[in-house]
Length: 88
Image (cartoon, rainbow, N blue to C red; front, side):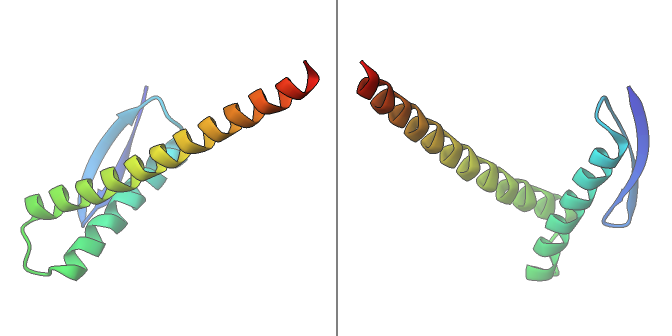
């Protein structure tokens, strides 16, 4: 397990994980960008509220992507069953 130092909203954090260092840096940059979006939309917001709103935005995006992936998987499975039925 490696550790790296990243900067999010001007604050340095040490992040530990099994993932590749470049991947962890990309994640930190993604979180930093999302927090900056929240701050740009609401400049007077507290850091805690900004973190919560950014987390909700990220969770919303993840949830929608998962739903899309589940729909695609379901469509692929249905198409595979239909195609298999053609050979029976």
